[in-house]
Image (cartoon, rainbow, N blue to C red):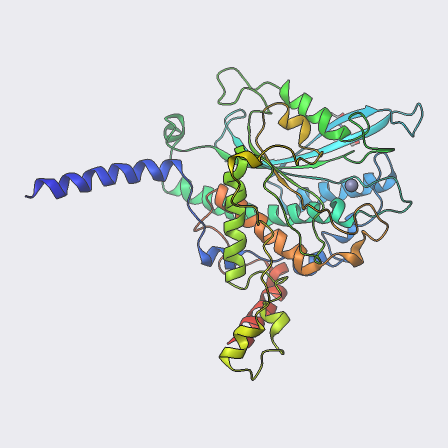
Length: 416
Ligand SMILES: *[C@@H]1O[C@H](CO)[C@@H](O)[C@H](O)[C@H]1NC(C)=O
Ligand SMILES: [Zn+2]
């Protein structure tokens, strides 16, 4: 009678061990709440992160250099543990004659401190930083200044958590041997800010995604040392998550699931979106206390339920039946990577924002609640992938976010 339950316990334990080392766990509610919103750094006039990107930045122009220097300064000053490299190419375009236009991709990475090159698998977060040459003075706030800013802010949040996680692993005595035996994975983060996504004339295969085409090809031929876990820079990418055309609030964005192979990641995004909305952490929600506060004051519980507005769902496309995976793809920076077998999560709304490729795609037309919500959602996804549970900043020492946190506190108090 005794041996059987014991036997079951024993098998359970083995199963648990196996699942702990393979799957990654959901992030806790507490950690979701600890993700700092962008706050004043995303002010469109003088915010430290976003404002410098909101200017024309056509490849090869002075604006392009200034924006790239802004990225470099940010990583060098605020995130000194990240490695910053460039991948450069030149090309003629259909509208710039014989001139060779330079395309300069910015690649930033942070690896576990004990890892060797070629051992680290990446979550690769991507956006393009160039802006379209026409209409004259085009800013491209959703396309893709705001996504670049989201990734910079996400990098800063993840950086602190990674430092704490890796330090605590060292303290716990996790040794090189554990990695060599495959008991732990080498997971790192990579952020790529691409140049030359936009067509100079009309979009064709050769007049578009200049930076991405050059980078994918170079990464494929950049081999890691012999006997590395990954044979080249391209195969180190576990998931290529491309953000584009984000930041319009109304109508709310709807993002289809484009690829069957990465529907798992799409589902993770959908689940996180749902949880963030459930905890009133999406300030763009029409049901967020900041939007309903005064409206529902002094209203009975019954009537409050009636006042509840339809909750948007950005990641609505969960129930794909097998035959719905064909077609519907959008041409973008992921193409040269996808053609080489990289897994892609394309985070781009369909339909496109109403401001798409119009003069009005500027800072004033961004919805800052939506931009902040995207930032938190992408950070949450990356934190889960990097297994940062227990290491997210609980008592944020990040002074930059305190003002915003204070606002959140007030909001949740009025809700009570
Ligand atoms: C690429 O271009 C950047 C910016 O002009 C420059 O700083 C860097 O040295 C170049 N890198 C290579 C490998 O040529
Ligand atoms: Zn565009």
